[in-house]
Length: 187
Ligand code: SF4
Image 1 (spheres, helix red, strand yellow):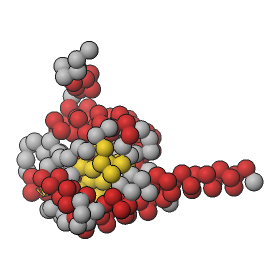
Image 2 (image 1 turned 30 degrees about the vertical axis):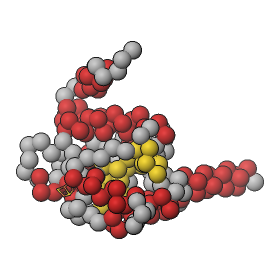
Image 3 (image 1 turned 60 degrees about the horizontal axis):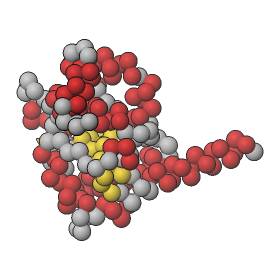
Image 4 (image 1 turned 90 degrees about the horizontal axis):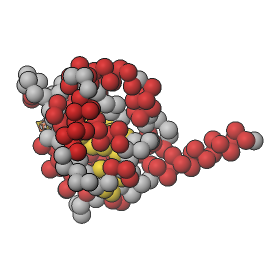
């Protein structure tokens, strides 16, 4: 009986999470320009209970909307780690998958999922708002069924992600980034 009640509670929680995903407003690459039309009157992702928030602590979803440079990836990782669990990532456009048209650039991250866990990928350069909506609906379904588990993978395989991050940025990069960010914070 007890087990039955716990299962039902988790189902209810997953349903609630799926119906109110808040997106942190952090755009990368050119794909960010597809988000305003996806959010506004014509395509309107708010009908799914999705809204944008500037607050990292209150957001559930991080959208990576295009190519990522190592410098941007450091900030993405810090933002992702500051978000509360459970949290989800959608990577949008061909660039996060395999660096797209920047495949031979010295300054573009080639495989995003070596550094952070992606739940849903959207291929295309650049994807239309319908494709973004489709990915959002897919993520909602995964959250409802308890299958969007990138945040768990990150915790369980932290050593793997950390090793790849350190290889790209050099050891102690977190400390150096925090020192840099402190420069912008007035005590
Ligand atoms: S996939 Fe295309 S649109 Fe998206 S960031 Fe790369 S080049 Fe820009």
